[in-house]
Structures are given as C-alpha cells and as structure tokens.
Image 1 (cartoon, rainbow, N blue to C red):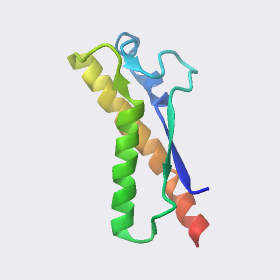
Image 2 (image 1 turned 90 degrees about the vertical axis):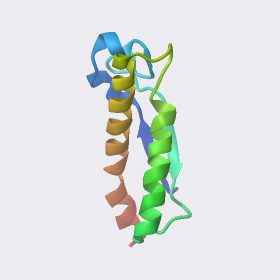
Image 3 (image 1 turned 60 degrees about the horizontal axis):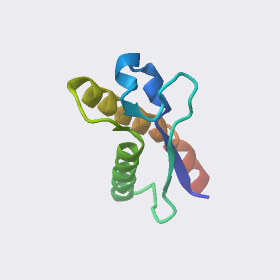
Image 4 (image 1 turned 120 degrees about the horizontal axis):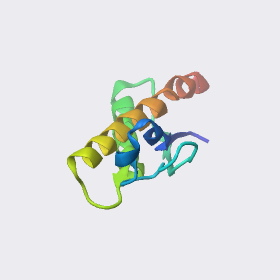
Length: 102
C-alpha cells in the first residue's frame, strides 16, 4: 500500500487553553484524526510528483487540524502549528517511501 499517514497528534505540544478549541488531540496521548495520503500514482523520484505529494500532505493537514469552535488568534496559531507539525511528521515517511520504490 502506497500511503503516508498524516496525524494531528502534534497538538499535544500546544498550550492546553488553545488546544481545547482545536480538533483533534485535546489531551496528551490522544491519537486524533488520521488521514492516509496516497502516492500510488506518483513517481517520488521526480520533483514534480514530490510537489504534488507536498500539496496532498498540506491538504490532509488542513483536514485533521482545524478549530472546532471558531477562530481566535490563539486557535489560529494552534491550528497552523498543528498543520506544520503534521506535515513535518508525514514528510519524515517520504524517504522510506522512496527506498521502497528502488
């Protein structure tokens, strides 16, 4: 299966007052939402396909990291931090995906 898992578990690192308004990951240890991002149709050795995967990962991060009860400056920051962390963690899986195609 050619999928990269993107998760919002990174919210645990955010401040608790902010996290309460952001979904998912309200408490330490909660796994949160996960989205599998397929790269089956991509050749990750090509820069163009890597950019496509990057866009897919960013879209998945927007899906799993969102505010439940409106936006404030704090929730906006927590959502953005969650998205950045989720993409970073998912991107760590790319080298393994590349080695699997060799």
